[in-house]
Amino acid sequence: MAKTRLVAVLGMLSAAFLTIGCAWPGATGPSDEEQALRLLRDYEAAIDAYDADAAMALLSDDYVGFRGSGKEGVARLVDMLEQQGGALELDLTNAVVTVENGTTRVAPVVSLMGQWEFPATYVLARTPQGWRIKGVEMQR
Image 1 (cartoon, one colour):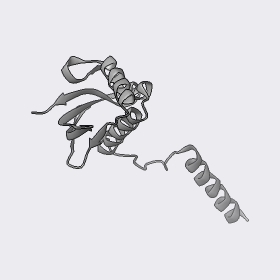
Image 2 (cartoon, rainbow, N blue to C red):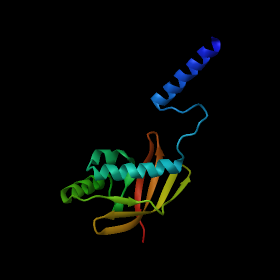
Image 3 (cartoon, rainbow, N blue to C red):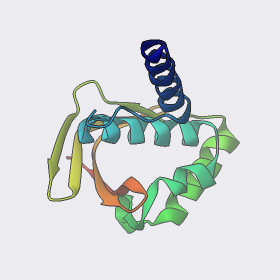
């Protein structure tokens, strides 16, 4: 009887952990590298959905984009792509993720927009909300 109760309690705890998205104590979640790549995929998806607010939510407060543009530059990019029916593709195939002192660099990320293709380095920062894109640097 006690054994049956223990099994039932363990089953309920397992279901509860799965339902609320928790892992067992001591289990590890996604690595910083996995989180960085997920962030860039989410950013690409937000832009391709023409959702400037969702894209900007993935940027740090001190975000600096191409040529010093800030978050407003991302809003303009989303608007331009929507007007043209375009999309952003981030090719992460050869990207290397480097994590050091709360900063992550992902490079090279080949950004494709229509006929435009350019390699970039995405710089991510750890914030209280998790990893956020701090900047995008063009590579030569």
